[in-house]
Length: 89
Image 1 (cartoon, one colour):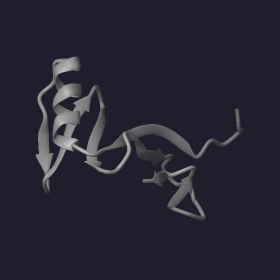
Image 2 (tube, helix red, strand yellow; image 1 turned 45 degrees about the vertical axis):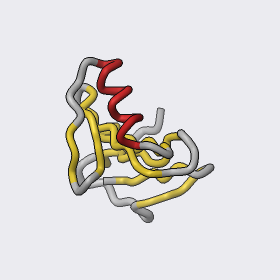
Image 3 (cartoon, rainbow, N blue to C red; image 1 turned 90 degrees about the vertical axis):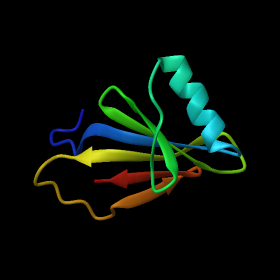
């Protein structure tokens, strides 16, 4: 473990699907959660984390929002690795 970690929390994930509404409904039913929307994007609150469902050709995780520790300086706020965007917030 690094002496001074930069990340202290996973805040949200984004999942793409050809039918985000159906995908979010499936997850909502599976976890017994209500599906809400913001700006037309369906999401669920899974514990303290948000799962957003977005339009995409393939069902896959497309983004992860990570909380940066207070006072940490980061060179880049967004990095893409293998089609997944890591957002440092």
